[in-house]
Length: 133
Image (cartoon, rainbow, N blue to C red; front, top):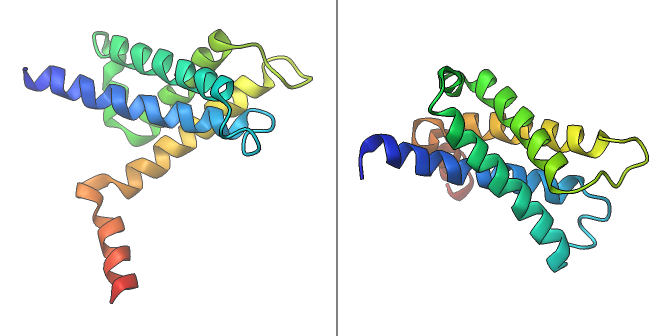
């Protein structure tokens, strides 16, 4: 497998967990329904669609946004909003509010992950070393 496809597989995995986590967080009753198969299937559907769209964008000039952490977070937030809107209707009273909130949470998770996992998770390793002693 070429290095470019390995990068795309890694990108798909990253873009799967962030929207899935955001979707599980933003759906009404999320933490009360964490063991619900229906809840998980909707969240995984959102994550799969977002990951697929993210990989498709690597074939376009928009792939340059992945290099910048803020552009990356914005792009993932927008893709998650689209994926969530396609996956299920909003369960909030205001139409599309749930999808926009899910996209915002996904973008924030992406931004936080870019800080925590950069340089082979240097910040996490330093925090762990500080805690352990």
